[in-house]
Length: 423
Image (cartoon, rainbow, N blue to C red; front, side, top):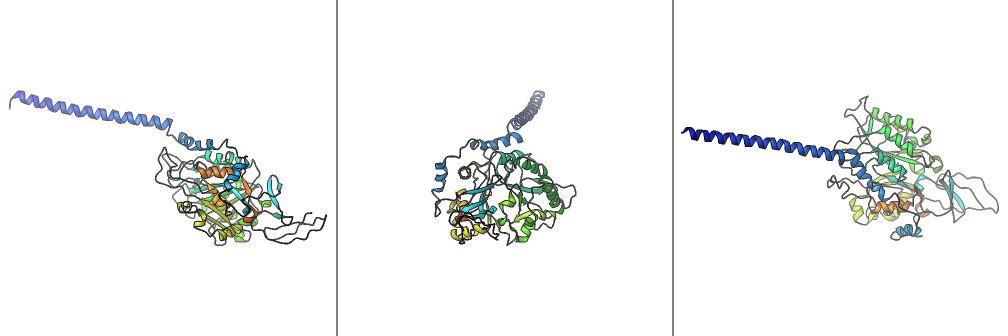
């Protein structure tokens, strides 16, 4: 082999090596440039704060919405008619500190005590989330907005332990979803309650806290939840007769009187008993057969096949909601979510479908601006609660003898008719 040929081969090898080297350098620089641009985008657009603000834009759909037009409200009822074509009670209401305590029964001119089960309440679902459950993005702002903008009286929080080890003395309760998005972090339970307490009492109305306990029995976490609630909501806890799940159904949640609930916190959990101090605070739970509280899912099947009547007998269900509290939610967990369309395929429960059967708590995802959330706004007409029509309440029908121009003293009763005579 000639020297010239050998040199040509060597030169070609060198050129190939040099070309590979150049390609490697270009690749490294390319990846570096891509990473640099991603970091810029992540900083300016995809960071935690920006993503939360993107999700919270839904509140702009409702901030300036007007609810005072009577025709708008009446239109909501056209599709769902009761005997008197109304879902709400329009009789004269007696109020204390702005809270309806008793109402007039026009039929026999008596006043009847109101219970929390006699109302429809503004209730939020997974209040701490700005978007979907899958790859959730918890935010204190979402909790604050629920009270300041949406004026809810029902808040739902998912509670976890920040430790994987049961019995860890340093563990604390936190608020989160099962799977968090990107580098989002859990919310501190104590700090969340501080925000709730700060914004909840502009109106001295009852406040419901629904706590979903998503961890194995852990006395340390249960007790820390107890101390957080008692420390922050001092003086705002219900009478002890309503504790221990309504004293194990002697004073159940559905029979909490509005007179006892003014300015108080009502605690609902998905577990009872916890065999901890937390049981002292639990006013209602759906884990007991005689709890008078049912938490049910408004499934796609219910939504697509005729509403609640596809699952429950309408007449029986109305009778059931007269004596029990029902909570309906939509799970809103889907794998079709994307970063820029985190709410695709999600839906809220049909508020009117729930209310026409007397369901007290229709739990809404507040940052999902669908048609049902608009109906929810219009239905409550800028209020946090409304009195159910007497057709949807458990009212004992009694004939009352009324003496002319004479007022009788209050006559105590055990059900929705704590009454006194009026002229």
